[in-house]
Image (tube, rainbow, N blue to C red; front, side, top):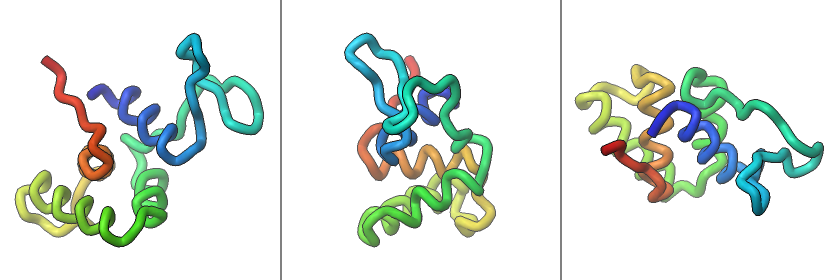
Length: 97
């Protein structure tokens, strides 16, 4: 998945943005938006989303982080690795062909 695809998918799960019937992004309270939060590039954006998950899914994210970061501690993982782990836990990670 591209960084933009990851940001949109996470924002949709978090309820920050949704798509209308034409595929346009809109903020759930304030009309159309141009940008999603940059989860892919910021720990300050992605970590609170993971913290809001149920404990069982947080555990899945942490296990995925350990795997993605070559068994290093999750506090050393990049925002991109956090995003991939989060999307894997949600069953939404897609590989590009």
